[in-house]
Amino acid sequence: MSLTPADGKRRADGGGRRKGGRRRALRWSAIVLAVVILGTAGAGYLYYQHLNDNINKDPLNLGDEKDRAAASKANAAGQTPLNILLIGSDARDSAENQKLGGAKDTFGTPARADVQMLLHVSADRSNMSVVSMPRDTLVDIPKCTDPDTKKTYAAETNVITNDSLGRGGPGCTVATWEKLTDIHIDHFMMVDFSGVVSMADAIGGVPVCVDANIYSHTSSGKGSGLKLKKGTTSVKGKQALQWLRTRYGFEDDTDIARTKAQHQYMNSMVRQLRENATLSNPAKLRSLAETATKAITVDNDLGTVAKLYDLSKELKKVPTKRITMTTMPWVYSGSSGRVVPKATDAEQLFRLVREDIALDGKDKKKTTTVQASTDPAAADDKIAVQVENGTRTSTTGAVRGRATAVAGLLVGKGFKEAVADSSAILSEATTVVRYPSADLEGDAQRVAKALGIPTSAVKKSTSVSGVTLVVGADWSTGTKYKAPASDDTTPTSADALNGSDTTACMHVDPNYVW
Image (tube, rainbow, N blue to C red; front, side, top):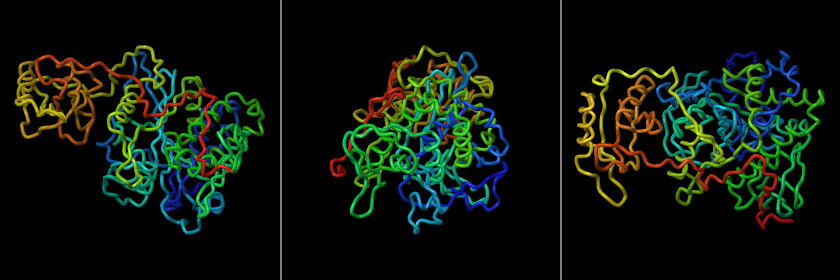
């Protein structure tokens, strides 16, 4: 991404912000997160107008409004969570970016979203969750419209997630995340190569650890060039950039291992910013603020220094020990080296984020309330409900007549427009109520309440055209629904790392030991 000064309006040329290379990218979003978390020590400097002018802006979501995930619900105190997508662009459209990590033959090609991390801050600001998605993940990318050229990119299925950025900008990456996770994203922040080195210098270095001497370099020219001795080293400048880019040399030389190294770096960065007294030095803080504001692109609603400052105050409330880094659970897709979300575990992780449940397992009992913005439900006898049979499992066939029986149950409760769809025989482990758009959310919640189905099972989905109740395998008999016990533990496959963990050390592939 070309990070030229902006005056708060979008640039007219439309093409400059998405140029860049198609090579492996660094993990630099950690730096932006850390700066925003703790760049508040000298708030006065953040209000200089020239810092405001540095910030580049793009629209939040380039998908169709009807496809947006429902807004997060407030807790009993009226507080709402924050969901921020951190995006790392592999743009190489400047001399500095080319020098730091790009081949000349990648100049001018669309940038890719090689780093994607969802930052979730709990409604009560007691904890923070970070979910990384490997760049090699295959996903469905929704239809996106470029706000500058007005070009519409058709929806695609089973394509690599980092392609989303080249389909109109970061707003398409946001739309892709919402489609996959059903998590409403409030803001995004995106950075490229150019600010990483100077930002790391301004911070004063970040301690990282390897369990052997490492040199990330191959005879064919692959590798980041990182060369470290065994143990802990404080990296900054280009060496910090190399750490964040390293794939060849960590563990199994995959993007998954690189994500793990990113988490270690981020944790250490946050601790450094909170504990390092050098940030009280006005010159250092000014340098950090200048570099950060020039390096980032944010959504329009976050596009002022004042709003970034307000956000930083919210983030700073979270104790380091309550920050949990995770990677989206995944499995390999054939022999391509690509990965796909691990169905049950990934959905479990996404649900915990949607429901604002702490990933460290230290939550107090929470009570949620429906936001006032949710449209009120229509009268029961005016709510059209389609009931489908989803009782089929991998070992048993569908229970015959189940959709008809439950539709009859709804009619008996006053939902006169409930009908069974006998043509659809589905497989759903748990009963779910789906609705296509925000104006029907209240109706869907009313149907769920009438049957004793928890609100967590009410989900927005563009796969339905109206309120649709899918009777799952957990309700194969009887007239009273009993919700299964909720498992609110973070899947072990998410590879969670606590923000206060100072013992993390990357394992070095023996082939890269010197």
